[in-house]
Image 1 (tube, rainbow, N blue to C red):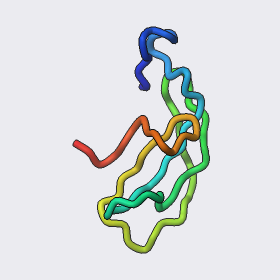
Image 2 (image 1 turned 90 degrees about the vertical axis):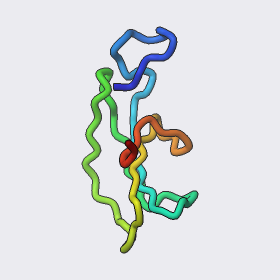
Image 3 (image 1 turned 30 degrees about the vertical axis):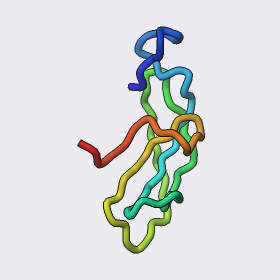
Image 4 (image 1 turned 45 degrees about the vertical axis):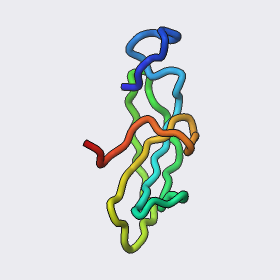
Amino acid sequence: MIPVAHGTFPAGTARPVTVVSASLYCAPDSAAAAATTASVPISEAGDATIDERVELPSSCLAPIVLVHPDDDAGHYISVTGWK
């Protein structure tokens, strides 16, 4: 679920985000993503499914996936691999 900021949108909704995409990054840190998916719609409940095959590098140290809101690869709303 994407939190609602300052009560602007109805509580419990993902708005104003309408689509998400995901990017794979490999260490050492790099400015470029190893792979990025196309955007998919996200429901008001915050649910989205990305079902896409991407070409991966032959080696990817410490892979991490970032989920981007509204085609904005400069920001992310979710991350894998962190505790």
